[in-house]
Length: 327
Image 1: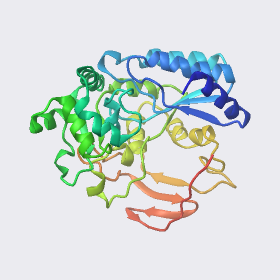
Image 2: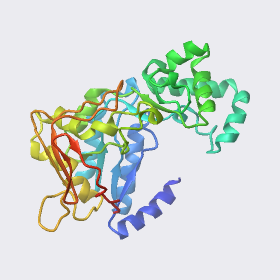
Image 3: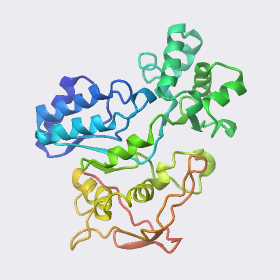
């Protein structure tokens, strides 16, 4: 999408007082340029802009978090209505297609698969470069191959390439072909110190960038990112000794609700929907890991959704009391 198109869309966002949440064009080597682009949109249109799941990837870019925060805070002080969300993990999760050059895949999976045998050395070299940008084959773990044989699940691209006796780039193409493009992977491409540095900015809120997954469908889902199960308990556990608990709770409740205009949510007060989580601050902690993600957090005693108790002292009630939230 061109800058002109985005600017026109943001005029509508501004008109209706909503927020435009951006997945930046580049989260790796051109991250500063990508952040400047989002700042530019906010400055030009006066619309609210949000950077979605802010992160710094590729080892040579690690420790840029402080500079990035300074860029965002300088823009905010100058009047740009900018924010960001993040999750408290050092690994990302997405489709294996992120390793394929953008000019090679146009969205047609059938054509892509047919063209694999014809890929040039240049294309293979670009795939290899993308693997390195994502921290290398030893740090890319297949979370769900979407194959009947689940052997690849939980294995690194490096391990699978040895098993198949293929190059790493051909291994990626093999998995994409066999899964018809569905395969998902976890990429250990971030530095935990950058993650913690982003915690320090009041421009940020916490979001999982995940899904609500049923605990009973383990076989079909492979081993998904633990953010789907433990984002908020992990953030509380990681931050509670350094950040006031009031600020921690605010970043996962009121501020996101106000940012995305979720009316009647995020605060406990008369007239609001009764969404309440009661937990023990000394015990709350995530249990989900990258090796075994299907684990419930500990320390949460009660969960109330729309005024109905759905979790009580370890017992989950299956009443369907939730609703889709539209901003």
